[in-house]
Amino acid sequence: MRRLFVTRPGDEGLPGPQRRLAMLVMVLGTLMSVLDNGIVNIALPTLAQELTVSESRVVWVTNVYQLVCAALLLGFAALSRLIGRRRLYLGGLTLFVLASLCCALSRSFEWLVASRMLQGIGAAAMLSIGPSMYRLIFPSRLLGSAIGMGALVVAFGIAFGPSLGGIILHFASWPWLFAINLPLGLLALILGIRALPSETVESRGFDWLGALLSASMLSGFVFSLDHIGHGARGTSAWLPLLLSVLCLVLFVWRQRRANAPLVPLPMFRATRFSIAAMISLMAFVAQGITFVGLPFMFQTVMGATPLEAALLFTPWPLALMLIGPLSGRLADRFNPTLISSLGLAIFLLGMLSLVTLTAESGAVSIAWRAALCGVGYGLFQAPNNREMIGSVALTYSANASGVLASVRTFGQALGTASVGLMLALSWGSLSYALWLGCTSVVVALALSVWRIPLARAKA
Image (cartoon, rainbow, N blue to C red; front, side, top):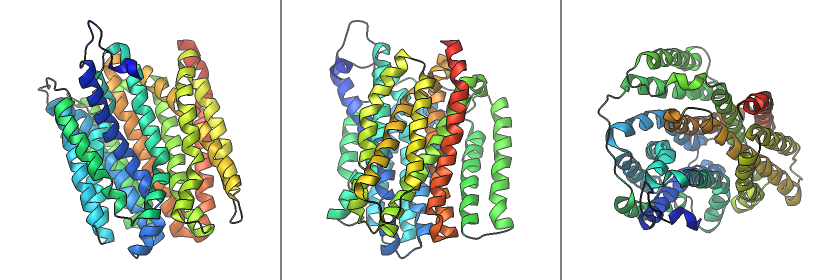
């Protein structure tokens, strides 16, 4: 860790002391934006009771955040080239802090959902340019380690969110889930104004039509899934889905003709990149299903308190934190697709073991299953990210980071929406949601095994 802040002659980026402060800003911003979603997941049953809404409806407190964030990531990544990454990051951080205050002051379901939407916009601004900000802060000799540290922060936030949420709910009321962002966000904003580097911005235009189409195709799909889950039929159920498909077709058409496309399509000609993106999507769908479905199972089926439910999650993040750094080092020495496939296989075993849980399952029985999922996901994530970023030309690396963030966030949103659909269909459907997660991991594993020879051939 210390070597990240040592300045050598000829180093680009920031000098060591300023680099330390800038790194702290990035860690705080990324941690808040990622952690915030997991914190809320564990509180969904509590929110449903206190705001007097159904379980299938309260899922939108989580889903609207994920959906807005996923829809705007590509647009914000492109916008940063016009206004500068420093301005975009600080603007997103400011909006996120203000929206957190609005969430904490919310007294109705509708107001909370609207505030979460604003939070999602701020989070998208920060997450869209996170990996590329490290290129401004650190010299090229330390870039890999810095990006790896950022990925570890994302994994930490995703994994420890439920545990932290349960602890907060045990000692305080649900508005404190959001109020905790205020001191951290203000500290990050003060340090960011002082430490984040400026840059020369480009003068080329922004693809507003492409940004609108990308947001529409993502949101239309999830809205359709939610409407079907609530019993909608006919036009109201399928029109958003048809519009989403139409926007996808128009988006691809637009990207082929735009002077400054949001997503350079030649990037997807790299087979390894495209496969890694699809695998990441399927894995995050499974994780989204699990992280939203299990709190309901622990609290409504097993009768656990929010704190007890959070503690039942703890083996997952602990295993991930232990295995994650090791998997990154293994990916540098061996074929990363092989390590990633092994991780997915273990993750699948963990998911299958979760399906067998019953209302009488004890803490130890739950703990080893959660730990198995954490080990598998920890082995999978870093090698797959390395394969995704490293399989495209250097000129596309920033765009690949944007796609990675979009795939991660949209996968989680899709998983959350799937749980909402299952809850709306019947009470006994939580196990079906977990089976759907298992199916998603099976698809990811099959793709990962198929690509192993491709990566070996390029080695």
